[in-house]
Length: 267
Image (cartoon, rainbow, N blue to C red; front, side, top):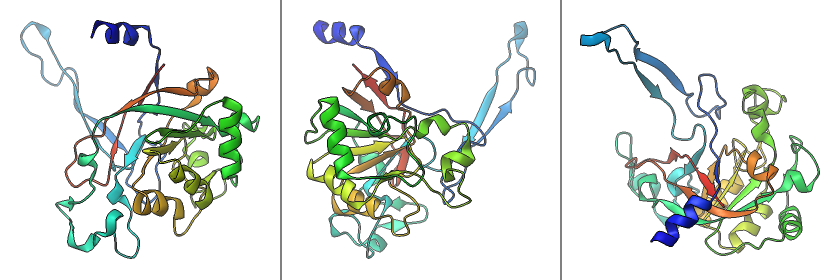
């Protein structure tokens, strides 16, 4: 145990989460992040001049840096494993199968594929489609291999737009969410490697717009692979950290289709 503590003390920790703030980017089909003080300093002053402040938040479970539960998507009315979604869902109870509270705390090998860096650009263009060739070439250049059970994170460079919500969601192309990411063949490259989860620094881990969201369907419904979105991968890329210990834990929301997370990379 002392050896483990020593290794942790020697590790550098990278925070891979984006900051929450009123007006932050969010996918238009999900509710925005709301925040406000419910009690200000001075509203109630106790003996000795002591005062406290408190606040309240409201947000969708797919807003900010978050993980998708397998029940987030269905196809043909069926969830991952063939379960009929209509039989296990209710307004108040959520979805009883593959919900986010069934995801155990994540402590796994993480791999960064810096596709933007490999393309020698700060950020991929809005209409950039990440292919298996891009993923394989990036992994080869970084001298990393993808192993079964890994968490693979793809950097597009779009984390730099987080404080510009209009650009982060649409790339400045209008009201429809638009941005770079893998299409179906890229998702199949990941699933063939048997990854546990795949994530990126974009709002929708696939090239959008995509009416049928084929990457989400393939990973969540067909392959049982979790998706992590809205990551901040800039510091990892800056320091050329391509392998690390990935640590994250979803909130235990019974019946939930997703959850905010605060992921960390230790190396």
